[in-house]
Image (tube, rainbow, N blue to C red; front, side, top):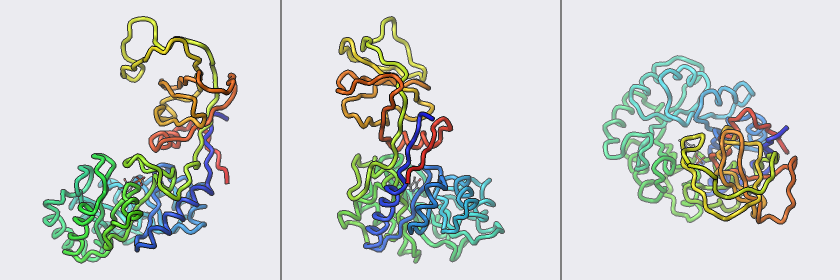
Length: 347
Ligand SMILES: *Cc1c(COP(=O)(O)O)cnc(C)c1O
């Protein structure tokens, strides 16, 4: 069944345990963020069995999926919640990240199986979620009154929306607020914050990280780098060639927009040998397909067809053959979500 996504679970385990150990050396507890694999139990349970302590996900459906699969470890809901999911949170999640006082009130008032602990989100510059650092005091004073000891800490997220890099200055903001309100847990970051640990620049008060990308792909897209010590060959997508023909590099006729309203640009390189693979924007982000054959370049894709230039490759590719790719974070997210991609767990 193609397209097929091979999942190398042992390599993911290696990455998780390695990063967990590097974090522990500096007093940081690591929560593995599973949203990019939709918390697929076939991947998460081996991670748990190998010794990963806690998991986080942005979606309650994924957290429920883990509970249904028998995962009893601490689970964090890392996306600020919808008011409409508060009851599910109290049922299934041990930690929740909030940025709105009304949400906090509803959580504290809700009755359910768990006494879900709360971390308040502070926006230290990335302009995504969290109360803006300059007026955080107003919210935190209220939050302490409302939640009491259930408010266990503060968290911040960087590098995801504004692309702001974590550094000593923005981490310090979190530490200062944490100290002022005597909050013990300070959750400082995601994959983009790992560099601060590597370079021993992380303030010692930061004691929790939430990491997905570096565990599952060995990369840190915000800093455009691979994370040292991790294995990048965790997911390989195989797609089948359905056409190989020599065609011009520039279309013939008047050019409007493509199927997605984009205006593709074409460089005239004369006649080129092009392959079409049976995978498209419905399954991946085509620009995030990274061919294992370095002589292949990905040109463009519509919903179901991706066009590759294979002119420079030494391989005599034929239709029916499968081509292999590593994936960017965005491409993996979409591939895991596409029901048209067959997920093949390789242990
Ligand atoms: C996705 C996410 C993470 C994990 O980020 P990675 O870059 O995948 O390590 C951590 N925290 C929050 C709030 C997130 O949304």
